[in-house]
Length: 115
Length: 110
Image 1: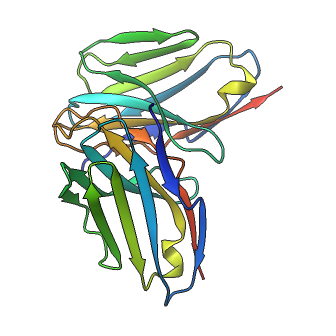
Image 2: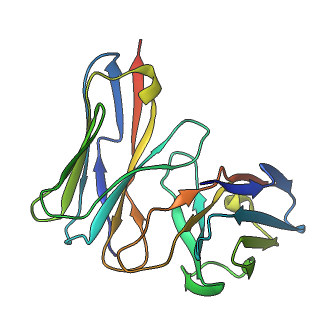
């Protein structure tokens, strides 16, 4: 099983709402990632978890709050977002987090619209 | 910051023609990966290149890593409609992160 699943597929939220994005993998991977992708742009790294601990935060605004409850799950909590945060949010996983980087397996993404 | 330039931004080819996309870095890379993203889809891993001058083939796709490990290319021979999508290189500069190139969007004229 090389699948990364993400829910929901689509999300529309207001600027005062609180919502969460979920990501799950059952490949035994110990590194998990959140990326943001705007239309016609490459994915931009937001956060990296390694062995359930936050390893990299790419200076992401605090209105995005990641959480890794266990080795299979990764959440992204959203609060007080801005319309410019509308994007495709991609989760990815790899076997481990190393300096040479492993193959990353991407989920289908959550398409977020902030009104 | 560490950046990877990818050209061209767009490529329209007649079905059956060849296609090439290039990635360049001013800094030596630890390795480089290539991903394909279909319209409305998510990035899917294609290949990883690690060694200087490495060449790998997958059916009609040929991937090259430059001798100086600063550039890479993806060449598709005799394109088919299933090749449509955006091709990204993703570079590793010796840290735990991938830096994606800007991508090349390939469209096929049947």
